[in-house]
Image (cartoon, rainbow, N blue to C red; front, side, top):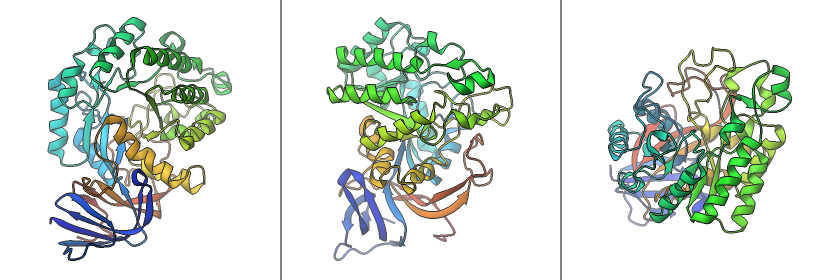
Length: 431
């Protein structure tokens, strides 16, 4: 089928400031009209999308797919399939696989395996330093030529400030985005929860807010002197939002993202050593959570991601300090983000932009919008459908989510990539 007509959906396209009930016509993988059906357009497939939202395809800016190296937890095929069922058409994977993505061969292998799966796109990040050891710079230009959309040191700190400065200068020369997860390794220590009332009550080693804010301050200073285009990933503190806002007001080329769970949870949710809530960076205070939401609302934090980290069933069974950190989040990214709009904490256009056009702009891909002539990556969503997250409903191979058993609203009904239907809900769209 080369011609598709989607009729009667509420089309929300923040990149073009469009929010209206409209028809969308697709011809040979490209959008040819948003509005009224073009005169003489004869569709091979007509989709009745009444009462559905039509959104640009979601791009998740931080998702670990576990392949290569940890295929016992998940694979590129399993996680891209899960992503497609959740309206996600693109996944950015950090370089901390095994082996590390520090050579063009590794980047090409990941892209080839993603292409073979035929599901969501995968955009790899290349390693900033060889082996993520923080010592020797990688050949970033070659990694970029191999399809890496940026460079990162993952969750490994580059403690040598001179190495970090040279890395930013190198990346700036080739206009390669640098993805940062700011942290001071000495302040971080062996901490597992936020330094505050919960760490005191439970007697757990703590991570102070300063472990992040000191890292943010250092990296902002290096961005200013190097001219590198940087993205600060996975911020968790209200103070970080303030610092980033000040930097942006002085026109520093820096953007930021937050994991969806940081906008919905806080340290209080840990309760009595509930390892499902162990994440890195840790859940902070309720005040931090509100500041992060405000950062998204004002645009200081322009992206919401899943920070998807699937684990095996036993990974969360160890004592809190020894349990694995992370949440399997691709299945719930859209529904949880929509909950912030339902509760009037975020405007719908702001929330959708944080999932679509903003991450696309950061990685430099022409996706995340529904402009005439754009590639038809999109999803149809029933914003009112209620569903329960369970082992049966969760498509990711990882089942580690603190939202398990929770009632959610917003269910993907169809996902298209390049005009091809890669997922459809049989209940709404029978074959």
